[in-house]
Length: 205
Image 1 (cartoon, one colour):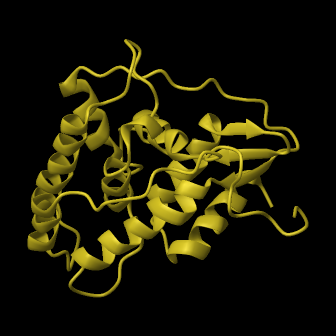
Image 2: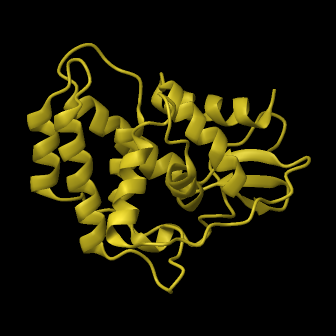
């Protein structure tokens, strides 16, 4: 199994069905993953980096343009990790992605879908990422990380774009309520976020 297919499978075991665009972003995140001994750890920084660099033409990763538009409009330039050598490294999802980001994205999807269940999509993932601590995002080129106010603006943008382009059966009022109530209180990230992933492939511990 390829590294990309392995990573998509790991995510699907947690969230169920995922959209094609979601699969593309997960695959792209491998380019920004953090090598740690025998593993290639896809953490929050890698996922955000993948969204920032996703293709902006055609149907692929279309919702990722919302994040790219936000970064441009806010004048934010991020420093992205350089692609690491991935030979013989096992792709894994980090603790925060497995325990916090993906479950929250599923919760958002389920809260905002009033019809038949839909695959987990980029809008759900991006909103969950925008609720996380900015320190887990890629650093800004001029130092620091996006402010909490700017992440709040991103959440508002996701809701505004969703209202303009809702999925079939999507509950726009539920999306609006997510912005009104603010992000949930979350525990701080584990100190070994990049070094102790929770999901491993069979035969690797």
